[in-house]
Image 1 (cartoon, rainbow, N blue to C red):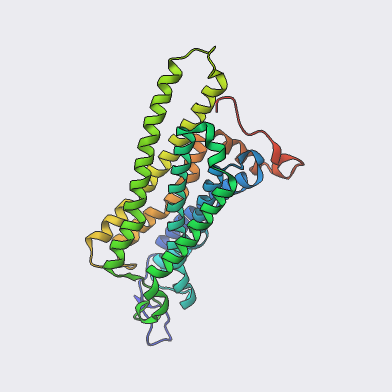
Image 2 (image 1 turned 30 degrees about the vertical axis):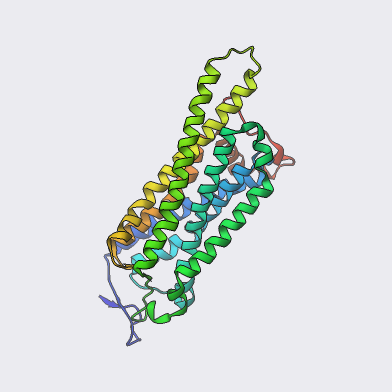
Length: 327
C-alpha cells in the first residue's frame, strides 16, 4: 500500500501488486483493446470503401462499429489502467468525459440495434417495397437521431457527475461514478426493457414471416414466377436477420447481468468489484460483434483479406465484387 501521489497529503491509497501480475494484466487489457479496435476498424473500412456494401443495413452496422471502436480506443485503455493501478492519473477533465463517452456509445449501440431490427423486419416482411421504404438518407437520419438522443440522455443522467466535482472523488487520485437509484430505474427502462421489448417483438415477427416464406418457397417449383432470384433474395434476407438476431442475443447476454445488478442495489458506484467485472463483461461485447460478422458474412471475410493485403489501394478496388454465389 502506498499513495497515488506521494507528495500530496490528500492523495488516495494505491494498492501494490506483484510485478508479474502487472505484466499479465497489462498484456490482457492491451490485447483486448487492440483486438477490439482492429476488428471494428476492418468493419468500418470495409463498409466505407466498397461500393457494394453501401446499403442502409450496413450503414447501421457501420455506426455500431464506430461505437464499438470508441470503446476499444478510449474506454478500455482508461478503465484498464485504473483497474490495474487502482488510481486515476488522467485528471479531472477525463474523469468527467470518460463516463459520458461510455454512456453515449452504449446508448448509440442500443439505438442502432433497434433500427437494425426494424430494417430487417421491413426487408423480410415487405421485400418488394423495401428499397422505397428504407434508403441511405433515412438510415443516415436515424443514425444521427440515435447519436444525438444518446448524447442528450447521457448528459442528463450524468448531470451530478458532470457539474458537481465533490461527487467524483473523496481524495486526489480517485474518479468515481455514483448514480442514484432513481436514475438506475430510469436507465433500466430506457436502456434495457423498452428497447429489448421492441427488438424481441420484431424478431418474433421476423421468425414468423421467414417461416411462412419457407413454406411458400417449398410449395412452388423452379418454373414458377418466383424463380431462382426470388429464392436467393429470401435466403439472403433470412440469413441477415439470423446474423443480426445472434448479435442481439449476444448483446443481451453481455448487458443483462449488469442491469440486474443495478436493480439489486440502492446505488451503483464505479468502485464496486462486481460492478467492475460486469462492466468489463459488457465491454467484451464490442469485440464480439465483428467476430459474429466474420463467421456469418462471407463479404466481411473477403473485404478483410483485401484490406490486410493492401488491395484497397489499387485502382477501382472499391468496385470489386464481394458477394459469392452461396450468399
